Length: 479
Image: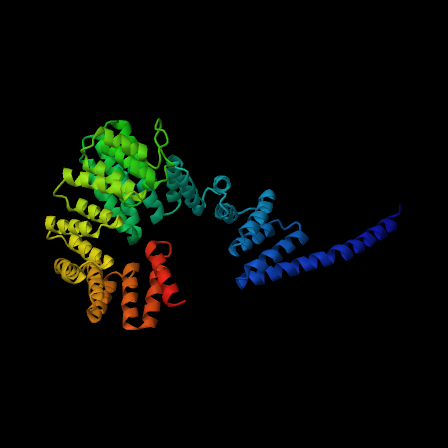
C-alpha cells in the first residue's frame, strides 16, 4: 500500500473517530461544567448526576467518580455516595477526603464494620490525614477496642492539636497512666473551655484515687468518676479490673452491675457470665455484704429501672437503716413512695431529709418540687421550703426554678414570672425552666410567649423527657 493510500485511510478513520467521539467529549465537558456550576451553588444532587455523566463520557478522568461521590455525600444521598465512591476506589482514584467520606457514608447507613475497614485502609494510604484518625477512634471506641483507639488518637495528635482527641486520650489513660491522663485532660480543657467541667471532675477523681492504697478500691473510685461523666464503657473496664483485683469487694461488684445496666450488658469481664442487665453482679454484691449502703442503693436503682418500686423502696429503707443520718436515702425513699402512689409517706421522707440537712438548699428544693409537682401542701410546706432554699442559695438556678414553680402553683403569677425569669438568666439552656415559664404564661393568657418557651424547651431537650413533655403541651395548647 502506497504512502498516499495510508494517509488517506488514516484521514478517513480520523474523520470517523471525530464524528463519533467528538460529540461525546464535547457533551462530557459540558456536563463537567454543569456539575461544577451546580456544586458552586450547593446543588449537590444535580452535581452528582452531572459528574457521573461526565465521568462516563470522559473515561480517562477517573477523578470525576470521586467528585460525583462526594457531591452525593454532600447531598446526604449515602447510598449513591457509596456506589460512586466505590467506583472511584476500584479505579484507585480516591483522595484522603474520598476515603473519609466513603467510610462515613457506610457508617451513616449503619454498616459500621465496613466503615471501620474503609477508614483503616484510608489511613494506611493517607497517614497524614488527621480526620481519618478521628473517625477510627470513634469506631474503635464503639467496639470497646480501647488499645486501637489509643493508638489512633496518638497518631492523630502527632499530626495536629485537637481538644477532643486530647480528652478521649485522657479518658483512655485513666486506667493505665493517671498522671499522663491528667496532662491530656488539661490540654483538652486549655484548648476548649467546654471540657473544663468534666476535666475537673476527672482530675478530682484521679487525685482521690491516687490516695487509695488498695488497688480494687482505687479502681472503683476511678470507675465512679468515669460514670459521672457518662463514660460507662470505660467505667465498666475499671470495675472489671476492680473485681479481678479483689473478688470479695462488694461495692466493685455492685458498680459493675450498674455499668452493665448503663451499657446494656454488652461489655463484661472474662469469666463472668451474661446477667440480666447487671442483676448477677448486684446479687453477687449483696451476697458479699448485705450491710453495705452503696450495694443497697444501687440495687434500689436497679429495681426502680425495672418499674418494681416495692423492691426499690425496700432497698432504700435498708440503706437508710444502715446510714440513718444520710439525707440522700430519704430522698430515694420519697421518690419510691411517690412512684408507688403513697404521697403521705413520700412527704414525710422528703421532710426528714431536710431535718437531717437543714442547711443544704438541695433538700429544701427537692421538698418544694415534690409538693409542687404532686399538688401536695404547696402553700404551707412547698412554698416555705422553696423560700428556705432560696435564702441558702439565692443564685442557684434550680432553686430559683423551684421557687418560681411553687409561686405559680400557689397562684402568685407576678412572683412566679419574676423568679423564673431570674432563674433563666442564670441557666438559659435549662429546658425545664422554659417549660415552667410556658405554663406561667399560659395561666396569664400570654399564648405567644408560652409558644416561644415551649418551642425553646423542646429544642433544648429534643430527645429527653422534658422535650417530650414540651411537645405534648404544644399539641394540647397549639394543635
